[in-house]
Image (cartoon, rainbow, N blue to C red; front, side, top):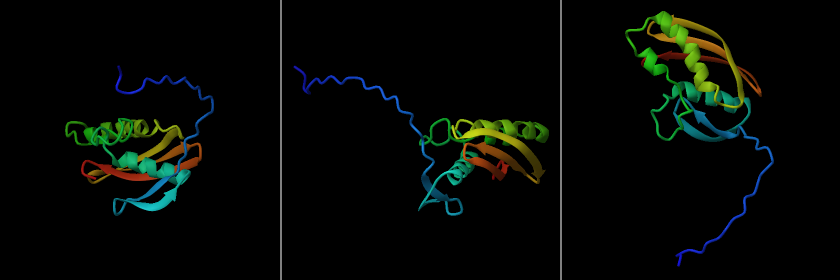
Length: 141
């Protein structure tokens, strides 16, 4: 005798296309806090791009393995040259972003090494439009 009733559920096939929304809470990157303001569309995608660029992949168990980047590993390696790092940065950034279904391409990279950091600018093509992204990345940035 089972302690709970045995109930059979019939499988229901859902043929409707699920459209993911971009609606999310806005993050204040200066304070590091989530605000009460809701954003969507291109603003939400831009926020996701900056989150992916500022989050180290596998470092936080709250995020799936799709979230974040692997830039710190290569930037902190003192045995690799700056030229090699400049060559790898576009690939690692694209890998950090392309998992998002709203992003169709990451291109037009411009990288400049200034002191200990790389100043990176690139274009993110999305289903909402294009984003021009600028970020400073480095071992301790």
